[in-house]
Amino acid sequence: MSADIVTSPEAATTPSVEALGSNTFHEFIRYFVASGAALILDTGLLWLLTSVFNVPYLISGAISFLVGLTSVYVLSIIWVFEHRAVRSPSAEFLIFCLIGAIGLGINEIMLWLFTSLFGFYYLVSKLASVVVVFSWNFFARKFLLFA
Image (cartoon, rainbow, N blue to C red; front, side, top):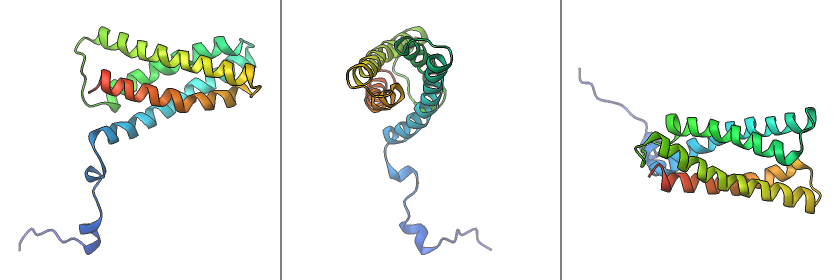
């Protein structure tokens, strides 16, 4: 008896996960999931500090953003990115934080702009900043740190 593998005709036309895209695409999906977890942590802490503990939203926004930054760094090095361009962990973390600091600046500007100038609820402003900050963070980290 031979060990032939029998497949259906559909299996021949269904692309495998590997064939769906490049390594960057797979890392993008993993980064999306990791960022989603960090976003839940970030936004939950923003709400808790602002609504429960009455910390001004710009201060709580910075604190919660930094907690989210730390969580996405840990996930990035253990799960998201397969290659590391910077061999020194301290230099890598410093660059990761500098990219995050730019993201924080974008976040804070957008929170202030949409909340103070346009009158949106601060959590709606946060959602507006997410798209821009996510895009900046992924592409900067991918091409500067994890190429």
